[in-house]
Image (cartoon, rainbow, N blue to C red):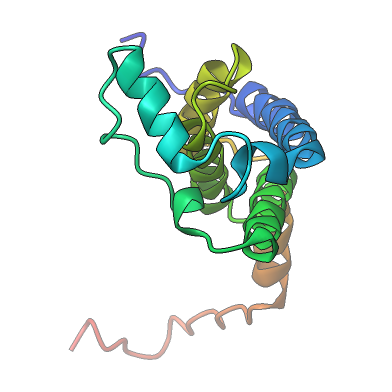
Length: 171
């Protein structure tokens, strides 16, 4: 009964805004030394990360990230800008489920590229992004709601049926 009782989504939507702002701040902080830590020729190249993971006893092959596939700094900055844009869209509540998943993928890409740099914020941020992507976090306080209202106002209203005329269903 507890799990299936309908609840007001307002708290979830407020949490979405807070987590979105945290994700934006997280990406902004990563941008300070983006090429130093995550660049192809940075301090911790993919080969060095694999060596460090192997030395610590962890398996290094299970962490796939698209950041390891990027050729140069321009591509890295472009992907970083896309991650920030996804976090902004998630915060504003535009295509909330999609932008939430894209933000989650962006956070996981940085964590998997250089796990030695990840701290205590990333596991909590990943959990909250996954939860809010599944929850109705765009049900209020979002651009999705505003767009839905405008579409409903612009759509033509069906004409009321004349009760004196026979309907197609009656035939």
